[in-house]
Image (cartoon, rainbow, N blue to C red; front, side):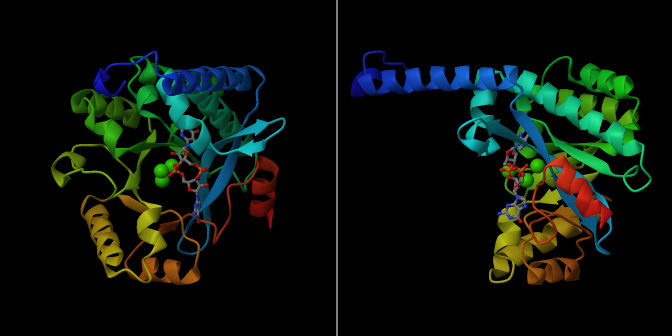
Amino acid sequence: AKNAGRNTLCFFDPKTQINIAARVLMEEELRTALELQQFQLHYQLQIDNLGKPLGAEALIRRHHPERGMVSPLDFISLAEETGLILPIGNWVLDTACAQLKTWEQTARTCDLILAVNVSAKQFHQTEFVKHIKAMLMRYAIKPGRLKLELTEGMLLENIEDTIANMNALRKVGVKFSLDDFGTGYSSLQYLKRLPLNQLKIDQSFVRDIITDSNDRAIVRTIIAMAKSMRLDVIAEGVELEEQQQLLVKKGCTNFQGYLFAKPLPIAQFEALLGK
Ligand code: C2E
Ligand code: CA
Ligand code: CA
Ligand code: CA
């Protein structure tokens, strides 16, 4: 089996065979989860430098009948590989837009912006722009209240199409945030061409900002970059007051992290706003 070559599937390796069987089973599981409506969105607060709620990031979970709440880290990559991310992603967008519609009815929540994670496969579907527009029409929500979180890697694939699609959605008011910023390879050159609204500083830089001067320098650079491109900047993974204070000192204006709120089921999220 060792000589089979890197790109050749070896069907006789018993270990590989077990892996394939396990994967088929997991894929079946994921399909079942969708059918049985076991997915849920949790909402994590995003605030400005005065502590005012700006909105939330929607984060998917699976409520498993025996295993309890399952993290997206345990199923999103399989969903991407199998294409199941398309129906799952549609469910996320649909649920998020329905939530925005509900928020519109109350003064306290009517201006909140909801950020939704979009995967590469979803974003590169031919019908993506049409699909988002149809969703916004169906729920009749102000497009400016929907923010799509994209990652650097997926934007690099087919940059011309990416820019065209983003521009088409920007034209109707949809917002874009560049997630996990600083972990990819983007050059300013191409970043400049993307119609973004926000850079999201990856939590890996926030984590050690107090002790690691390299991370502090990176954060400073990201914020300067955002300013020069007239983009908002949000820090994720803020857990400590000292981290927030350092971020404020460097000019960061928006925040998200356990320090303010964990991702919460909708009822608890709304209760948090009501305080
Ligand atoms: P992400 O988009 O980078 O989301 C941020 C992750 O950090 C979330 O993990 C969140 O719960 C966690 N987090 C928030 N605040 C803190 C903090 O203060 N400290 C620490 N240590 N962690 C914090 P989660 O919910 O497990 O999601 C993991 C990843 O799964 C997300 O990373 C995103 O890439 C993916 N994901 C989640 N929901 C969706 C979705 O609806 N669609 C797609 N395509 N991907 C999703
Ligand atoms: Ca995100
Ligand atoms: Ca992130
Ligand atoms: Ca991430």
